Image (cartoon, rainbow, N blue to C red; front, side):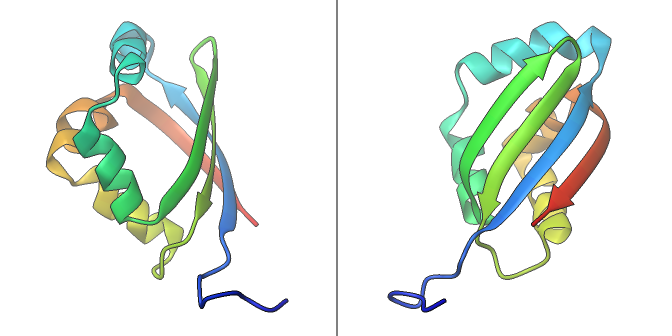
Length: 100
């Protein structure tokens, strides 16, 4: 498929994350008003069109990834960014990802 303007075709990524039960309230608070630095961090690693759904302590995550490096490497870089490291990362337990 021809690409217009040299833009990279997105990779669709879906994953589930278990939110730690004792961090559930914090998770909801953080995602009600996402800090601009966290949005910028996601964008900087190539995440676009992010959607999240939560059922109990299980979160379903969908995004389109346009980064150059492997998605897992981009997420590891994202997890080390200052605002993300102190706010988002401590909420999560087990992560399972699928890429297409």
